[in-house]
Length: 582
Image 1 (tube, helix red, strand yellow):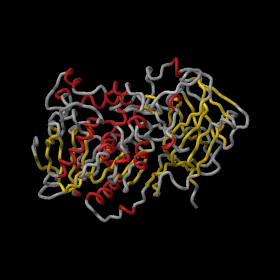
Image 2 (cartoon, helix red, strand yellow; image 1 turned 135 degrees about the horizontal axis):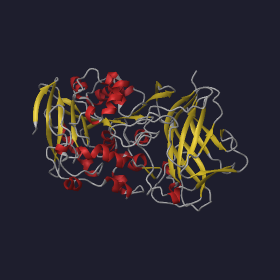
Image 3 (cartoon, rainbow, N blue to C red; image 1 turned 60 degrees about the vertical axis):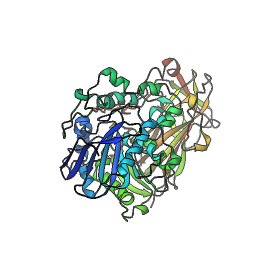
Image 4 (tube, rainbow, N blue to C red; image 1 turned 90 degrees about the horizontal axis):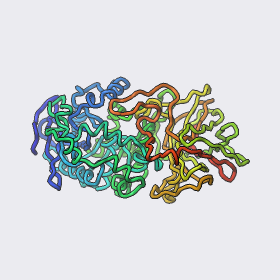
């Protein structure tokens, strides 16, 4: 095994820039952290574009500061010199008898090549890295994958290739559907990916070299060793923004970059975030439900996107899972309930509860009807035909329930059925599930990224209302997104809108609200601030905005939208009410 340098430090044998040759001759570079001395150990592998040598503290300073302030246990028990963005800390894994491998993906960090995010070539690279790790003299041949976001998403992909030595995956907050989870929410383009590339990828592309950072541990250039010209860098990467904007429907481009659920057979732990609206929540739940794996578990939590993975809670959960499937430990994991939920309460309070399925069998699916008389959410449909309108780029309409007569738990997926007419050939629907105190103060949460995240959201472009019947249920519609069916202006159309899974216990006297808007949710209170790795100020949706003027021209989407409500056109939302246990 050829490496830049091998050394023993901080209780670990470290191979810097170990070379892994791909089937096309390209050499990727990885850092390998393993227990010192002779032996064979199972492997935790990650593969991604963020530069393995860039420290968490330097590359993502505000995220690190927020995390350790809220969760001091993250920094405890480690020198934190080897902390990197969204991958495990080797100082907390190697002493337990694991090898930790971090691979810089093709074209990123210390690995040369052409960047083409999530493309089939990248997935094959991961499979080859897994098989390389399996035959090293320090490996037992049992390979697990772990990591957050990018390092989780590509686990869904490579698991579909079924590499022989992939023994388990821990998908922590990772989307599984390129179109629906990330790039087009309900058919509406999400501008976050283009900003993500500018803020998190460009400055760690291989060849950024001496314009970028150096490793605080080795002193080597994290995106080197060579420094390439701007022209060379452009030639070595796909145009990610063009790729997305030129594929507005769910076509082969998105299929190639999405999970093949029927081919995923490996044991998996899918760990999602209630507040991951706009990126990962849906993917973790869909992955758990649809993967063909016999051994699969779902865990759902709250708080910031990167935090829980690094905490004692997150590490203990991962270690029990991996100890069973990588080490063969008889630790009772196989008897663990298949669903572990952190049930949300106001005030950032969570109650851990074990369940056996998703959605919960005891769910009372409850319809709340939109009633313009008093702008109410009523449990009875209106008897007279009514309609109410709002401006296409406006804040829309909010319908409120009566005060809850007792604590009311909403846990699961939701869906709205709306009868919609537009002045034009289309309309974009932005739905926000909300909760208000008796004083009508809105309840928000520390979300995956935005500190003022609403209870949940859903989106739909009305011209893409077509459903896939075999994948749809009344509580989770599944849209084809394969063509456009323009509206006839003034005519009402039935639109089913998926609202992402959530959990909240609504206290007695509080109200449930549903807003139907023409633009992204905006938190009515103070600013959510900024993160060093994000472009925009946070105003309720974090970076997940739908404000591209080419995708949403005012002439089409800025005109009046009308909601119709009657016994024949019962616009409503279906909520998953969980009965109280005595």
